Image (cartoon, rainbow, N blue to C red):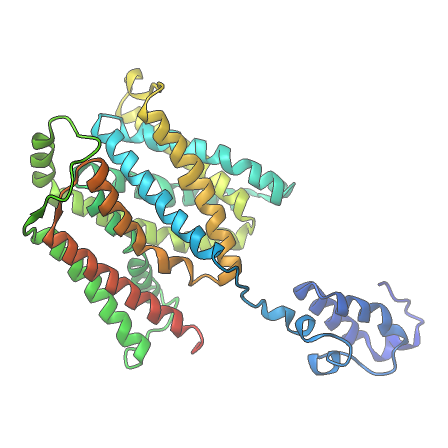
Amino acid sequence: MRLSGKHPCTIHQPREIIELHDYQARTGSNCAKSLISLLPSAHTPLTNKVQLARHCSPMDINADKQPVTKSGWRTPASMVLVQLFTTGMILLSKVSIGDGMFIFALLAYRSLFGAAFILPLALLFERGKWREMGWCAMGWIFLNGFIGYLVPMSLYFYGLRDTTSSYAVIFLNMIPLFSFALSLVFRMETFRILSIAGSLKIVGVLLSVGGTMLISLYKGKTLRLWDPILEHHHKEQQTAQVASNQLRGTILLLGGSFTFACWYLIQSRVLKVYPYKYWSSMATCLVGGFQTAIVGIILRRDKNAWKLGWDLNLVTILYSGALATAARYCLNSWVVAKRGPSYPPMFNPLSVVFTILLASIFIGDDITVGSLLGTATVIVGLYTFLWAKSNEVPDK
């Protein structure tokens, strides 16, 4: 409400009007909006929540706290779907790569299709916000596409080619550990080693690393539980190739996970410069797709490597773009809004369990005693780390 400079309340209460405007802008409070319109005729300053309590309901007063709301069974069901989408992407990508699909073609098409699926969401929820994307934001998005898609995804998928899907999925779950290490290096968060949360973080990291080493170094007895539905051709040759490239694949997977962790730091900067998540995600997918396409064309100019047919490769690309990119992003964003940012990571270890079971059922990956023991150790370590991380927030 615009106030005239001659109004008697303007001399005594300009600060109150400003603070109420600020409070209403932060909270969307209808009560504060009503008080703003009534303030020029009021006789008592109304500036803080104690005074607003006489006019507003408790829910309206605490609106700026943004309480986490519960949605019953829908939030955990959404997170289980997200992990199933991730599992399906890994299994389909493993089969497509094993059948000879060029990795950079897979990454380029997947990213471009992902941008196409996210674009309607950006137009629906952030209409017209693309006009606010300046040169600074475009520069950060270009770097975001390079560090967040081109480098980590190429390293990860080449590591997936050299190993098994049930082994590669573990490294996706180790990204929070790398992010924690980078946060300590760049002093983005404090680490109190003598506190309970700090000690549990160390235990979680040691268990996760130890579980990964156990899977790599110890196989044990192979458990023949069922016959795979999709039997690979030349399975013995592929098994020998995986065994000989295990070290190289592990190094590539570690590099991909570490670069993913670096991407989280850049993503936080992108959202500060351009705080529209759908448009920034769409632009990142678009830029990342063109970057991978350029690198792929430099590495392989054979037209046959870039052709798409009505086969499993096309299914992999569409699935990765629609479900593993757009749908997963929307579900994660919705759950974060309902339950907070510490809730989705608690379900990440489920992708390990799903991948081990489904990879054994569909493509015949071996389940060994060492893989089961190592996977259980990694899951316990991750849950320990994430629990300590979530319980450290109130202390701050």
